[in-house]
Length: 120
Image 1 (cartoon, rainbow, N blue to C red):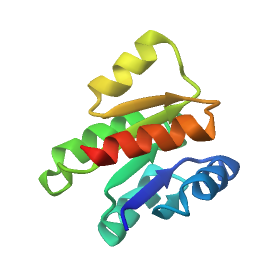
Image 2 (image 1 turned 90 degrees about the vertical axis):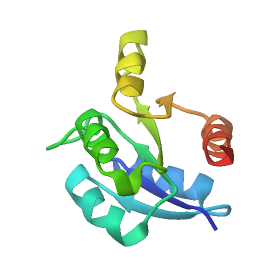
Image 3 (image 1 turned 180 degrees about the vertical axis):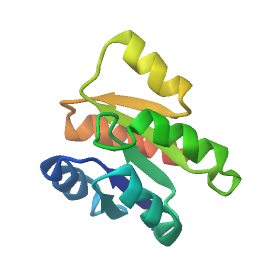
Image 4 (image 1 turned 180 degrees about the horizontal axis):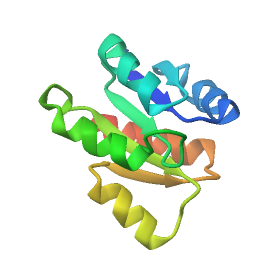
């Protein structure tokens, strides 16, 4: 079973993603980049769903850090953010993300993007 790490400071968003994805994937959660850094080495996810606006290290900076660690080169990252302007999306992809989903998202949109990224 493929593993997904959901990183978002909003507990309701994490719960919703886990509900949507939990039947097909093993889903772990973190509420910050610092907690996610610990979970990353424990879980070894195939994909990370990453919020941008979080306290401490934001999602863009954390994505850039992950991309510097060679052991995580194959991990897919999808930014999931309320920042939905074209500049925001471009910055998310330039930070190293493989995909971008704007909040609010539909369950089908989330599932389709996760499946697309994990199929590569």
